[in-house]
Image (cartoon, rainbow, N blue to C red; front, side, top):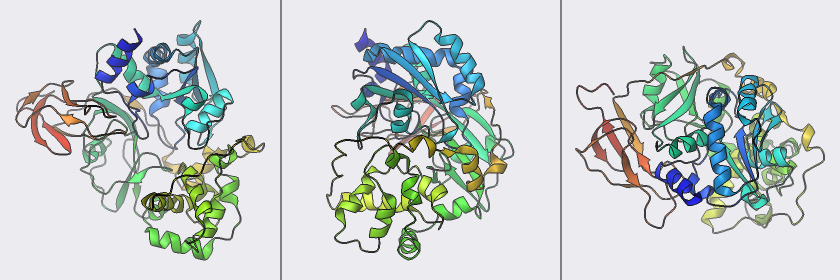
Length: 444
């Protein structure tokens, strides 16, 4: 029974629907005591999970129960914010009499960080550099569980839900075929001209600026945020690393606010960003301090909320991780006796205040979920949109495919995920992506 469940999830190509996209069949092959639903959706402006938990509560709970069966978990925990009142009401009906409970989170950032979610929901501390499984937990997000429920019914992952917001005429949350271009997605929200604007994929805290608007959305795309080029968030994102490093050397006043508000430091991780900023002046002989950068989750609290000088410890940490890895330097061992700081509960970043600091108050608006199907003429489906090896194509140029057909498979003895056609059409190109175009005369 367990093997059949896992195989169906594998066949359907389910991966984590946010973040890095870890193949779900591998995750649920482990044993765990608790399965936690990460329903916090802590990134400002995004509206996907909170609406799915309301509208698709039954399906999400079925997915959660499937993971509990596969892992042998004795409890399911749905972690979500108190302000998601409609979702809470819908979920309470679905979990009645089941070994599943709701864990209410405050409206703070980064409530959706895996380590923080596990601590809030269970009181267990995931070791620095470790994964939730180290403390008998598995964490899945909302859309992943919905995809698991669909997989059990034999339906593969062909679409993804995302919020389109910011400087667009019609902010909305919608379902689109995997491989739809960013530009095509923005047109649906009414934004046809992007002169003087930039687009962030993901949330405003951890998302990245998109340089090519023809790039496709993937199974992990959860948001597109359009902002004017002059917006402070965009200006900061566009600073070159050399400038960031120079600012750090010149302007850091060692106030240690970045450390005192760092969510991972507050969970007992050996990470003190202010000390790393101090070493940036002398990139020699400070290896132990610089190695602390490996513990950084790059949540952005330090640069967008804590630093009074407008510096970017997050970018410095990211740079150091890459440089140290090139030199073959490994992360330090985690603390032997990791404990959360007693002040941790009082140093959470309020979302409303964060949105104000980011200059996004005007964009903190409803983005209602629409299930309307949109005609997409062409998709470019990346062969690597998940952790692990790129999938291997099993189709040829010129071949006709139907939506849901298997078009790429996991390489033998590799970590990866199956990929399916997201529209019906003809395979036009195969490279590091598979391009499918709508067949002439077709409207599906």
